Structures are given as C-alpha cells and as structure tokens.
Amino acid sequence: MKLNKGFVVKRSAKGPRELLKALTQLSNFIKDSLNNQQSIWIAQREGRAKDGMDMTDPAILKMFYMAGKQQKIAFGEYMKSLNIVPVAISYENDPCDIAKANELYQREHLGSYNKTEFEDIDSIIQGIIGNKCRVSVNFGEVVTEDFETPEALAEHIDRQIHHNYQLYPINYLAANQSCDELTQACRDRFAAKLAELPEQAHSYLIANYANPVHNAK
Image 1 (spheres, one colour):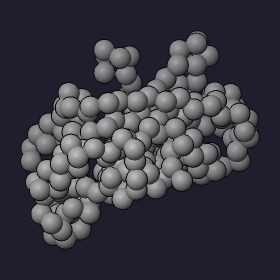
Image 2: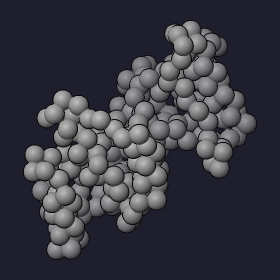
Image 3: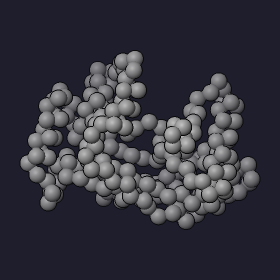
Image 4: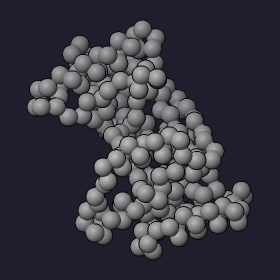
C-alpha cells in the first residue's frame, strides 16, 4: 500500500460510533486530497466480484458524502464537486477464475466454504502476478449530473463501467455469442479451465466470463 500511496478503508470497528468516526475521517481525507489536486482511486465495492457482476456499492458513495453532509451541502451538488470518473479495468484471463468458481459452487451446493489459513493472501498475490493476457483500462466521463440518491448515482456509474468494459473472445464464448476473433485456441483454453472443475461448477466459471457481455447490453 505504501508503494502506491494507498489508504485504509475501515469496514469494521468496535462500535457504530467508532465506525462512523473512521468513515467520516476518510471522507474528509478524500475531499482534502482532491482539493490539493491529488486524485484518489477506490474500488466500487468491498472484495472482488466472483461472478462477473461488477456493481457499485451505494455505501461507498454514502461515505464520500459524509464530508459534504457535515457542510450541509446537498448530495447531488457535493458529489459533482468530486469529479468522479468511472474506470473499467478488464483482463482477458482471470488468474483466479477456477478458484472463484469452486468457492461459489461449494457455498451453494455444500452449504459452506472453508478457506485455508493463507488463502486470501495467496489469492491477492495470484490476482496481481497471475497471467492476465491482454489488459484494458478505459476511462468514462466525469459525472456531471445531479443525482439525488447514492443508488441513482451508483446505477449511472455502473452503466459507464459496463459500457466501457473491454470484452474479449472468451467473454463472447462464455455468453454463447459470435465473435470474429474467437479461435480454436481460445475454445481449447476455456475447455481446459472447465475440465479442472466438477461439472456442477461449470456454470459459475461460465457466468464469470459471460456476465460482462450481458451487462454491456
């Protein structure tokens, strides 16, 4: 985190007051950074989407607004002042795709999933250094509309992200849609991924790659 000027987002505390204090402090830190011409990057939700459904959590936007609420500024007006730019980051190969599908399968069909001691750390490392093939970073437009609620703003951000998300042949293959770039090599790689999972878990891997196609519509 120190390498990229990262900051901690506290999602738990000893009590509601402590959590409110921590989130308000973070909200003020973000606004102060922006006032000093220092942009910040923040994930749209806690954790990673394991099913390809990348949706913005309105709670993140509510946290942004805490500093504005202290100043008695309307939600829409304050959020416009932040100059939010939705960013879509996509990669052709998800190095954690099989692990994600297996976890979802076990949770739904076996009722639980027991992580190993260092599984989360290993997953983070694999997500960083694992083979992603082609990677795309696409920037949307600055949010200039006046949205009255966090939910409405979250939907707008999602529309931009889904529209700008770079789709690859494997996505179209999973969604059973045609693609000029689709090759036999891509089909073989996808088949090899499925072969590593129980047949009942195939749908979770397929959904992880197919949902970005469905969301883009």
